[in-house]
Amino acid sequence: MSAQRRPVVLLRPVPGDSVIHRLWAGTKLVTVLALAVLLMFYPGWLPIALVTLLVAAAVVLARIPRGALPSIPGWLWLIVLLGGVTAAFAGGTPIVDLAGLELELGGLLKFLRVTAVSIVLLGLGALVSWTTNVAEIAPAVSTLCRPLRWLKLPVDDWAATLALALRAFPMLMDEFSVLYAARRLRPRLRAQTRRERRKQWISEVIDLLAAAVTVALRRADEMGDAITARGGAGQIAAAPARPSAADYVVLALVAVVCGAAGYLEAASFLSTS
Image 1 (cartoon, rainbow, N blue to C red):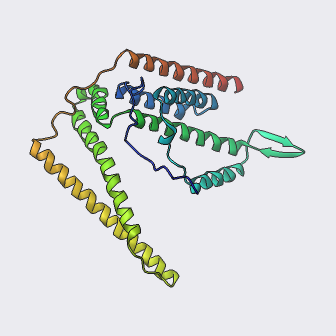
Image 2 (cartoon, rainbow, N blue to C red):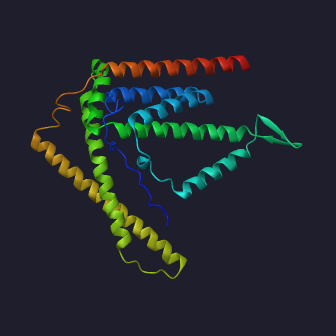
Image 3 (cartoon, one colour):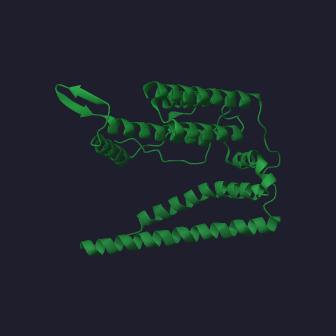
């Protein structure tokens, strides 16, 4: 009997009162941005290892259960394996001599490095999703973008739009899940030829997309009526949070990690060039 698959749950925090949960949402957003920029400019193994240790420590402090991790489908592992095999044919340095057979591992190592960066960034984003209330993100964005008000940019409108989008996303995901379940329960006519199967598949995709667009438009209309009845978007948050001492400690730690990783990576590059 196979284990039950755990679905991907987005924008729904894991209940808890850890130090990571209590951090200001703006601190988490700045941390994600800083680490993403670090890995974009210095995608070496040392920065990847440092960021991985930082994310792992945050997961332990946040006490994230193993059940929060989604099940990885088998086809995704197959795609990763196929990508690794394809990248291995690219060759390049370093070259390993194995029993008289020269193996060029450059392409495979680059693929592994890109895969590691992707996994680390996905884990970082998942950590923010698990420990941050959706209602706290828009006020944090409004506070972080406050200097842009000097340029007469509509920061409050952007924050209100982001807040509405984040609130509507889980609701639409539930609606789409219901639509997909209804499609699976609907009786299907058995096609006899390949052409009939292709036409049936195209028809089902069109019907599903039309139903999804209809649901999204209906939800948008209901949300627009609610906003109009309130007289506008109103305040983004009644009492927006502010960074505390723990937030400054985390930001200082992230700055040290980014600075050390960047310095060591640059020094390693200069010593080998």
